[in-house]
Length: 475
Image 1 (spheres, rainbow, N blue to C red):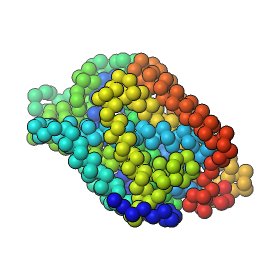
Image 2: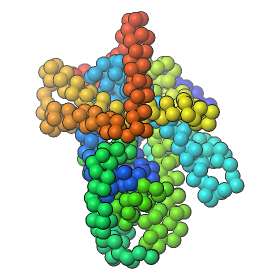
Image 3: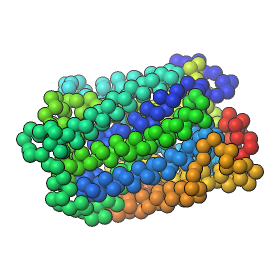
Image 4: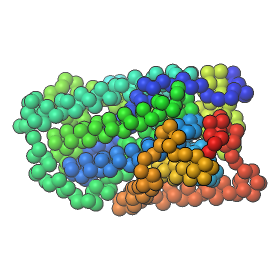
């Protein structure tokens, strides 16, 4: 389908500042907010949910500033996989790359099904698989074209989600304080916070909801994956970090405040989407249809971003010798085409496991995917510590870094401790506990496979041949 160019040296830096900003922003505002927020409120109560999102936002900030320092000094596609390989160990880079790829590839497949199911609301007589096929073709076509085509599409996908959240916050706050009257209920003010108490389920409920909350924030690290294809990364990456993190916190915290104020926590946990409920309460016409469209956009955005991330991670793995070299070949548009095909193929095969092995293999895949994002954040912080030590050891001056983590080493250490805390929170919930067993079991198998495959054959993996090292000779 595409003529592959084996000698093309690097990906094209086609992403502009606005693309990077909106992609990172939109990557976090997704189904975790539109659908998962009700679960968080139901588990933790009104104040508990807000606290959980504040803690999750802090952890995201810590991980992003660590990633920012690494991505500015070493702006490569694949980002944290290459960083972990160079600054922790090749074995850790191998594990981080493959578990992150597996996590995203599985969810890409699930997003296709979710999008097809949403279309049933408007077209009940058309089989879901037809819509799945249409969306597969659409997102595959976008990702097989230029990086700019992907970036522009994601820019508009993200724009729809951001505008929806802004509208929701404005309308919701007006309803909470009586500026807008509700259709069939009195103005709530802050009664939902007072009635059952701020923490009706105790701190255990906050702990249990943490994994769901952290999942909502995961996707922000896509900024690092895109670093190798971003114009002027030394300028645009720090700018994206400074603006995105705090705006995301504002969006999430205000949205959770509105939801908690308008929807009692016992009802929030069983709602398909509390956003639909709130829009319906204030009398917005066709509220369910509006949110169905927005959630469809969010799902397609996740699928689009997931394909991009997986493709670049496979490319990075191939560049470091941890995947077949063919995965690093670029088509005439500068896209790792084989990596895209393999990712899409795995995503579609994973869908079959949800039908033929729903209680076995599919459950295992979901469990492994559940820890992928948090494990990646932990690895980013550890890699930043490794980089800083190596940089100073080789005579580098911290003052010369164009973007640096302040309050080092407190920030990366706190990030690592908080990631471990999140895993500890998951142990409180029986269903999430399974994710820890299977997830860390898979991590152990990856390490064993790496040492058996590469150490015994003395195949010392490095990233000395990547384009990044041209920028990092002094490290």
